[in-house]
Image (cartoon, rainbow, N blue to C red):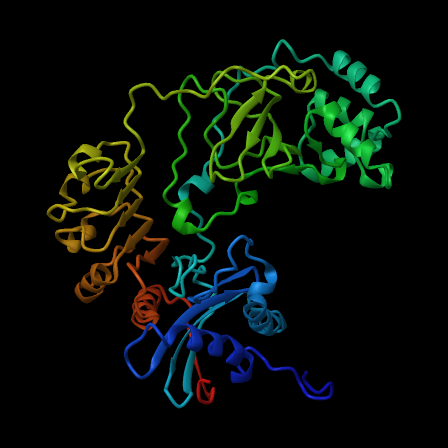
Length: 467
């Protein structure tokens, strides 16, 4: 334990990293033939990714926290230092000699770089301050003829809820008005009725967990307190550029729900118990009803599904049997060309194409010529080695996001052909490549937009001989 009078190690102290580095050295020594051991990883305040060979538990016993005790304690040491420094995430690479001499390089963070997912390599590079992907900028289309469903019955709703929740404490009109002011929207009558019966505050139930459970059963979901209602707009549905740029907003003409990321007319009021949010929809699709109940899956980045045509239907357990629009025969806005999906770029090309993802490919590299004139193409992601001529990318003048392998980026950088229309970019890394060359390329791309660089901090120390 550290002396109480001495300062705790900081994120830039070699001592902070020693336990993690020893674990990585001991784990990697058997796998690397060279005398020196190279290791890399990422540690964030919400999780970590370290290439450790963990011991399997004894036969017949599941893995337990105790089996990872050394790893958890080593990572917690770094976590505390990150928290003290106000840093969310940092990746690193280190070279460890047989005698224990170690050169540790901390990579970042940079406010212009999103964290990588399960990798020490940088995530998406934000080239324009505050930029968000196109689907996150989409607002709902107006549906002037949208009206509540015939099943919406505030009187029946109130009567049913009062029968089920006779002891509930309801919200006052002043509390409902305050919620409307906070949200900036007028609550639909059914939602007002719901909260007039129960304001759903946990302190109203105290330790009566059965009362809370009865409230869930009465309404059909885990109801938020009136004070916790929120607008499920696009900003409430955070998603990394790496994934968000590959989505597309599509609302077929026969859809009940608009295919949005979020909407200023989606009022989230509950949870299904699995992390999926229920909302009242005031901006329905062409075939929807104002005030219908939708669900936003926590496993999806975009869109919502219809649950009930009205809050009355939800409470009465009359779930909607309508499904989302099929989209007719329109070609998809997002196309995947790979060994299992579309067989060519030509097949993917059409005027409405927004996203082209080229994945694992076992034939001749592909030309981008069929998509160079497409007016809406904004995202291109190409697996390393799949492009016949990366310089064709210079002809794609509408791109806002580009994801390529290191060699393809090298070709664009050397030719001065990086599209200036980009708002974000990413380097797609195949396998466990050394992070340092990838960081160097990332910094070259960032420099074209005068964005903050990924700073390298070099720390040296000695881990001693491996026992």
